[in-house]
Length: 245
Image (cartoon, rainbow, N blue to C red; front, side, top):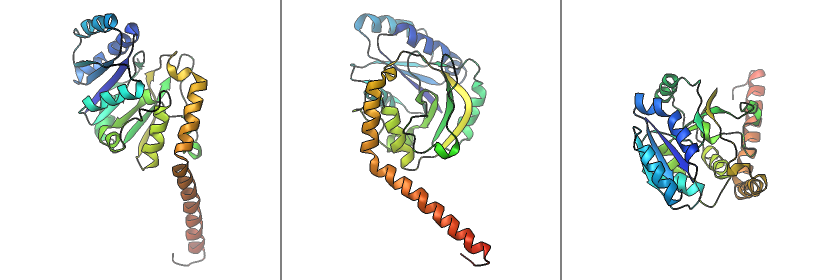
């Protein structure tokens, strides 16, 4: 049903906090957590020893080739219908009803379920409906987004050429090609601050690049929205005058 993919590098405390937060899901619902570790030899050896005490953990050491590459390694190892990319340091929200989460996964017909994310001082708030697309000012928190594995494989997973904005680039490809999301206004995850995504200058360069790379798709969707609006206006204008469409 669900597998959690967590990546880590030289952050023993962070990944163990993440693993501790997933314990109820792993023990009560046999949810597997895949740990992709790129730590140094000393840390990885100690981490592997600590994880041996936990249930439903699959550990793999991976040469440090970047976040996107590690995400894709986890994707390749996964088999579940739903995937949750929960980075080392991030934690399942303590108020989450895991029974409700499992029920949602069993009943949802969407390709992705987007929850909200709790930061140190606030909970994320998504934009109003009219501003949801395109998500170029990335409002979709990947640690609080569950994805169907088949749809993620269909678009080729994460782009390994992005070091920071790989999630924003994925959302443009995924939802720009028709994937359907459920939006849930409940916090799913507590976010660990201090990651590479907080390097604003580097992140901005990658966001500029992904907008440029996907400019044709963005233009196509923008034009389609205008055409759909005109079609709807013309249809209802004709109906209001007693004419069939």
